[in-house]
Image (tube, rainbow, N blue to C red; front, side, top):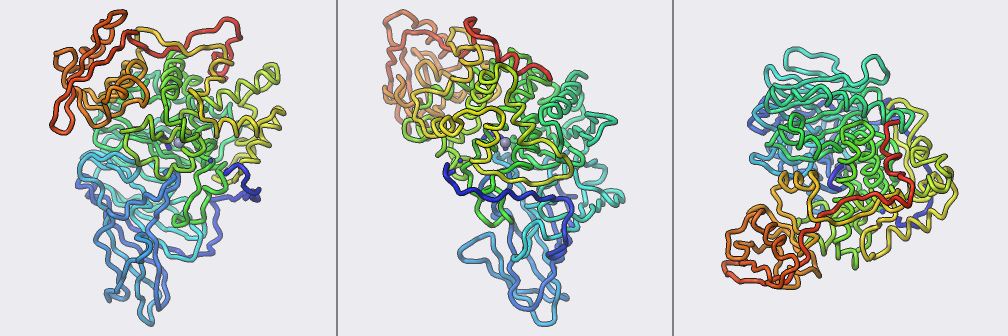
Length: 626
Ligand SMILES: [Zn+2]
């Protein structure tokens, strides 16, 4: 997933290598018929047939959602629940200790329970992950975990699901499931394990375009884009070409694929939650309606599909053993997310550049912003990077207020810097003969084939790195995961021949990010992260605004007596450079107004990467197309 570790000494767990596509029918077979024909009303209906025997039938609503790393299965949106057997309505009650568990009383003589349920998709725009807004007047994403229950007692690999789906009249669809029968808008899919059904969402919409990305090659990859308008599906040809490069570059990086066919399911809408969620053979990625046709938007979101695609190797095929749970009820342990998400974030960024979705300059501008934000994060003095992973199930859902002091799921961005550092060390140790690409081939590559799961531990990661080049990798990672700074880990950037510097003019990337997110950022000057209406999202603890008494939740109303706007604030900071008059901020806080004076005179500061000519330029080498 996007944004979003052993316990270092965890016992070595035997690696399990499991093929997920073929399944021995050791468990029950369930049929699920989902009616999404009312998707524009944001309600989905489902009917399930579940084998049962007389007595108590314990059913689970999926709680821990793979890739979301949290117990966020949206059970509060489960409605219309009704159970029957042979026409007789059955009694049920929720488990008092776990709200995702339902007990149904099955009468004597019955061997099947019929379950009817509705899933209430958010009615107004809600963020979040797959439980966020997922349907508009023109499109919908169906996440199977939201429209089913499954019986206790079997692993999700061992339960067979026979699924069908009714979509709105005239809508098209895309999924990695195999369709065995499509009569009009009634789709019937080949039976799969519960694991693979939950892993295979369906994207459907009135405007849906399928673009093959590696025609004639095996396994095939396809970009399926649904949008709220037909016009949003017509970017310049070079965009499709860059995504074709992405498939080729990932193939070159890993050397083998672990899918039979891959579908990028890309949703373009201003009315759905924006995020990306990985699967073995597809990804559910969602950005704004103009996310492909508008060049600025396209660049801002360019690394999303490369990130989610990388997860097919790193996250789905290779997965930390303690994140690979047998079903959706057992809690996941998130300590190794610095590999699962951190390495994916690094590889996703370099693949974005290698495929041409970003220019080298775009890549550097993005990296400069990442490094600068992490360099202004006082929360690292109390919370180390390991704890951001250990606490991930909670941190994914915290507010942006107090972020600099609380910290968030920093194992995405901070481990981008750390894995760059690893890449640089490998290149230096081997005098350019090897790189992190070799680790990826070894750890994530051959033999390819259908979806499989090969788990790993911290020790396995160290062993893989040592196989590429011997080094004190344990010492390196323990230091990276437990240190308290000060400042961001910049060893990778500096070792790759570049320096993080602050200059008075922003990069294009920086300004676009600010505008796209409706933010006003003075993080590196006075320590303010604002909404574009002056609302204070966060103050950086220890920097001037926080020390003066400003805090999250307040609102800057005026700057030097003039009504607040982004330009007014930026201009005031520029004008105060070298002077002696303080910058006056009129701030509203819980109905009261107060003036704060900031004695800041160093001018604007924006992050840039600048070349360090004393060292070879490894960074440019790293992002070159292979
Ligand atoms: Zn991810």
